[in-house]
Image (cartoon, rainbow, N blue to C red):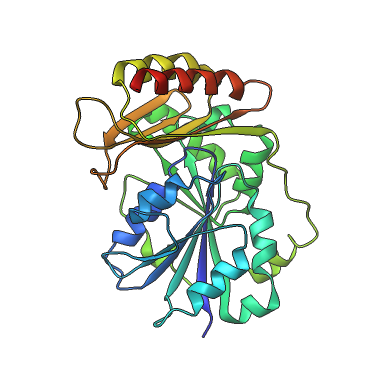
Length: 305
């Protein structure tokens, strides 16, 4: 029997990794293989899911997590050859990716007999949605989806929620659920595939991701928290997304930093004893100056030396 695939897509910072974490932890009794396709060589999302980004990892609930290192089909075969094989494979698309490209790869006839694409869920950041309706990438991600997960609704007024839900309803998605509610497991892990509609994507040209630029930074030392916060405050108007693990002077635990739009969080990392800093910054080409940002980070590193 073919292993069903759930593809999770959505714009930068929408909450895709959080949704997958909830799915992994849910009471469904299935062995899940998770493939994380991050933007750039530093895979923060894989670290969030598994505690490490090295190869194939057994998680506490018996799931598998592996990083996508440039070859989706090779990685799928790696998962399918596991003993026992996963009951479900979840693929997290990069926030800058048009899911059509992944769908086309999954139409490979050899893979299709072993693992077939079931549902595509698009995670939509509720407060951010009104700013994204006309964005070509946002439209492509939404257009490809069978399901929509509406996230971060706790910061929205009832009127704004109604407006966003109404607009999503007009997009023709057959099922929309709120991230704050119970996960519709039966729908998410269903094996029914929209084969005919998927085949329509074969001739489409996926949107390129070259409208985005990113900066990756690592530092072995612990840095000053206030200096980091000041730096992020200067950079944030030009960032779409930032995420990473940070060690601060005077603090024993490693911290997970995440920024989506102008909303930032800093929380204790699952692997709280890791050392040093790893950070990824993403912005629009022409707006985010990676060279200037690198200088800021180098100054931060010099202060830590």
